[in-house]
Image: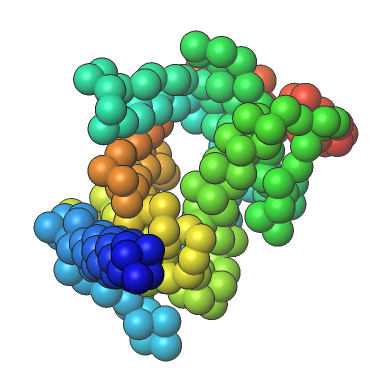
Length: 236
């Protein structure tokens, strides 16, 4: 009788614990909608069947680009760490070939995304490199969809927001619609200028971590043919 009573208490305790866990998870998912909404761009939602003219004009100009290279500095703020993790490198876009994210500091790493958003690899990868590659794929894929003007797929994957400032600066806001990305990322904000194209990417995660990537123009020198050969072994 005593064992049965103790067993019942145990399962009653487990039921309470499960309910608390579900409640906490529900609160966390609800917070995803609120966090990041203070930014003005998230107050201007887009309807995929009624996209504003200024938004389409901005994207059409992007689609005309067939090559660019930008330096980047990435600062990732983790809740558990006092100072952000900083990395830097080169970001390259080649139309019909894809995107390249090459980290030069603090350690070297290379990640490539194909024109269909697929992860490209040069041989075997360690589990950690594979995880990092998938992480960058999730970050770069929506950017690729914006450049390619694939608005239908973009709208299927994200809630869309857009703000045009002073007719020169623009912001695109993205909130993931689907799991697993929605469980990891609360929002993505991409900012750019018409003359310099992209300036920053800001990412808010569900676990109070955040990443800000700032871009700057790469010095003139090696051009399209060089990077086609270097990253994709393609002749100009």
